[in-house]
Image 1: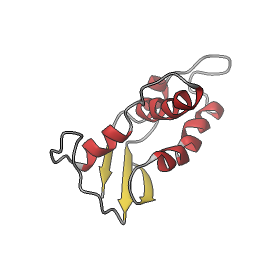
Image 2: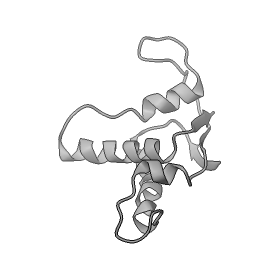
Image 3: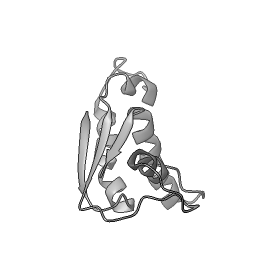
Image 4: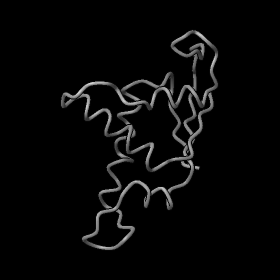
Length: 109
């Protein structure tokens, strides 16, 4: 596992802190020089991802108010934000990269 240990809920700040992991791929070559890698190639070499939330006090419910698992909570947090401006695209880029590089994800609170 790649374990990301955070305090509190999964929010924009926490996701942004993972941009370092996403940006590391700019320095990793899977296919060789001058070839464009995709998330699929990286995911074959990356471990499973585990988000470990400490001091977590939120009740895990979906937008309809039904109870959800910690894994479902993580998946909801990684959903892309609707919109097309530069700030939203930057947020969604990190989410897309995390989902591509780590297709096997889980969360524990």
